[in-house]
Length: 196
Image (spheres, rainbow, N blue to C red):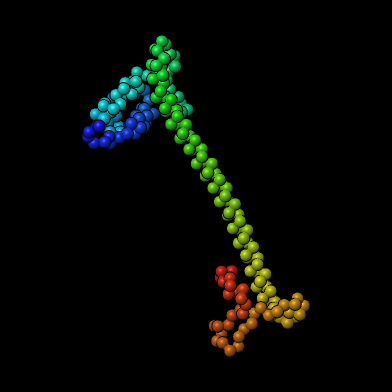
């Protein structure tokens, strides 16, 4: 049974920090002091737990410059094969960092594509909803106009007989002037249609 405090950083966190440092500083020799300065993780942790990985990364032959399009450090395939011609394990170890980096970048790209597609779907859905809202607002305006025309026409006897309208508006005589209003249930049921 191991004694002492549990590790503050998991191996995955250390590998991720190392990967992030390498992508920001391609081709730069790695040592625990630089990692401590850049990541804030104590150099003794780097030395004790990641010394093998650091040594492998420092052995890996990197090209003089990175690719312009991606900005990622890529291995010099010719040098790697020449240096590890008879040592498959050495070649695998030399390329394992790049394999991990490519897998991590692939996962990020997949997540980005998914978020971008979701964003496009939401944008198209939003534009459809906005069009529907405009159409419904225009329909409300038209119905309000038609209702008010019919309400006004219904007060004239000639329109009542000609179009078969009943009185929609009636002004109560016994109430004060301020209390006079439409006596229809539609206005009471849908006051938002008649508030300008």
